[in-house]
Length: 248
Length: 201
Length: 79
Image 1 (cartoon, rainbow over the protein chains, first blue to last red):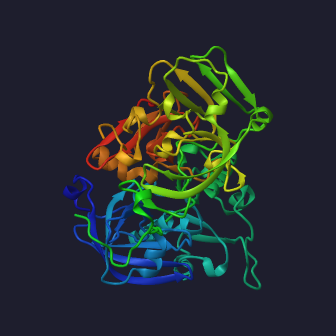
Image 2: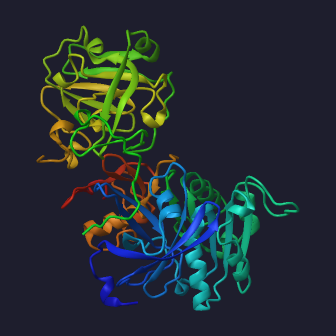
Image 3: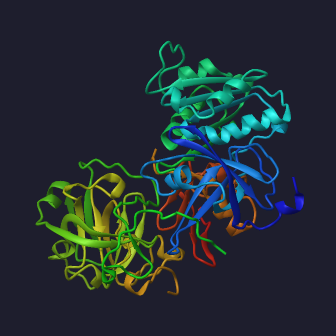
């Protein structure tokens, strides 16, 4: 990581779209090239700024989905029908287009291999994005830290990074899904909203003092954090990142 | 250094008669929710609206008493300092003139106090003479909590931060008393037609 | 619990622009209830400006109003 660049004042930088990758019917990943990108840590995000030709501007924050990779970063965006920015990013943006972004920002909701494990990641829908950056960073670093992901999605088709998670599972990474609205035939996994009993089933126990990261819509994060505290997890070890109802 | 992002249009911005849109504003069909704090959930049993301060005596209404007051339907344009304007919004409420009937005061200013602690200040003349209402319905329905229900102030000629949500008190004052945002960068008066957004505007 | 509420992560960029450093890891103490939390964990509300509130007692910790070339910052809710 370039030490000198870290001290620079945060400014808006141009980012060029290199590639777009569909993830689910309403989610896609956008790969950007950002000149002078100083590197980032898993869990950090960027602020994105779009300008229309009449000067109108909109800004939103998006978690970085990728592990550090030179000047390349990936954002994963869910299209929210009532959204102002997400339909543009999820549908319109194409290779060659440019947006402005500012970052990386965030130091609180961050995991690095040096922190170690055990780690519990709990994600609701697109809340999995910063958690995926942590999973990918762990894999790239060859870390043996024990990491568990509990991911809540509406249906099997809505699970973001589904195939990659299946590939990466093992070697100390456990992936558990819960599907809240519909299940594929023969589904034997969890089929309800994340609750205290489910968290206990997934573990680790509070006694193991895991680093916990919870990300998703505000009501999801509130419910999960509360349940974890009730189960004895230390509040200071539970890091939360709330996405608002509008998200993007 | 901003550049245009190809194909980005943003929130649907409607083309309207520009005489209705203050400088720097864009018109939206949505009704964004902005808030300085958590939405209070107050039972109507414990709700009250009071006028106090530089008055002969405190005037107070319970929910039933307030709803028994004459109310009217008002259709107005509203303008938020965060640049969105919404036209032809329909409300039902009690005119502040009605509330002030029979209230003796020499006060020249009023501070609105909300559940949750938000405040905003105005000259008293900006809420009298048919310029302001305490509203309890929006678009024909009871005002939703996230938009200020059960009641909020409606002062359409000024930026919307001057219309306090979850209104509970009107405190009449001899001297001006800058409120929650007026003490932190936002203009003390807030006329959208003179684009008075911040201090010094 | 308010669905419109966010946390300090949501204003990490704004805080960085104002203070020139990453602020979400800064631990501050609430002047009302005495609880200490990193700024990344405080409650954030977007009104006319940004309001930071204590996640324990919801008391106002800070108000941030960003203008084009400067910001009005009130941090008086911290101890």
